Length: 97
Image 1 (tube, rainbow, N blue to C red):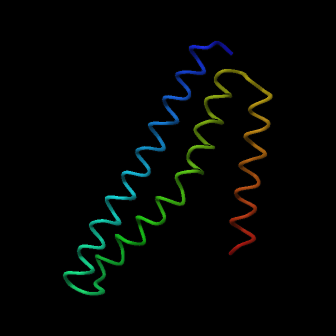
Image 2: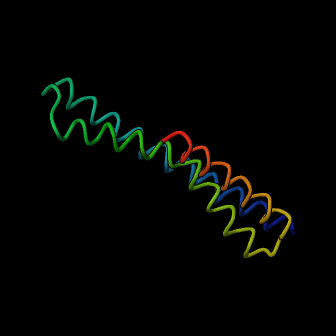
């Protein structure tokens, strides 16, 4: 894998993580303001729940994005490693439920 490809992957994954955290923070912030202003309303609860879900799904999105990138780069060692990480994340989620 070339240095340019690795750098592009890191930039893309960084943007994905930043976007997920910013979306989550926006939902949580707006939801908190609504909750303080109106109490436990449906909109406030939906925004707070949505913000937490986005925050929890951000690492999973990172793994999926990395998997797609490694497949495109044909780096099979990292494809296998990323698939194993994905399986562990899904298993932890399923076993926790």
